[in-house]
Length: 258
Image (cartoon, rainbow, N blue to C red):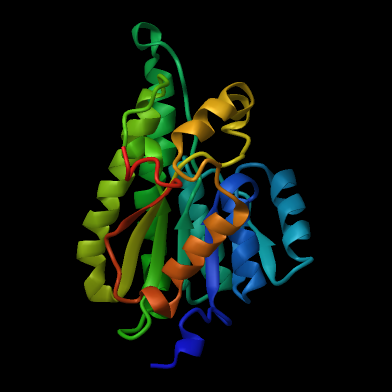
């Protein structure tokens, strides 16, 4: 054991879906800062260009526009990434969306949109990129798939975002299922279940109910970029090589102490 190398990620390559803003961008910043060649993807080309420019101020980063809710674009993203790289050490499945509406009016379209992106994209992008993950993987240093779930998949939310909470609970269990079957390929699959972070998705909620939300969190605050990046760096590093199938609550104690 060389403890000085336990968190060393230099020379590795990562892909982060939804990596141009919010928690995905926080993670991207952290990985770039520790020497990971980092690709980010999201739907809008302009947003991708802006994120790439910002990340390149601190390290090596690239952006590839793609809507991972669309099967054809998932295939195209995997093909483009494979054209550029022959190995993928770290895949962060972060892209997600939410939809809130009263139970009696909740539309099929809202349900399908959330499930396709939050759950389907996790499985199918991992499937398409599995050859590159296998190329990067060794017994001593597995490749990593890190799925971003949610505290809403661990507890029953107080808001009517039914497919969001259901999709994130499914992501947690899919993480365990994939971990079991990909272990033989030396691919670790873990999930992070964030609580409230200041992002575009939570902007209104935190503006209207931030004080109340903080009062229910034992740590009395929302998450920070360092929290998101630090947990991801741990799960991507040699320090976590014996951990797979885990769901780590990143919520200041909200789900673990209720």
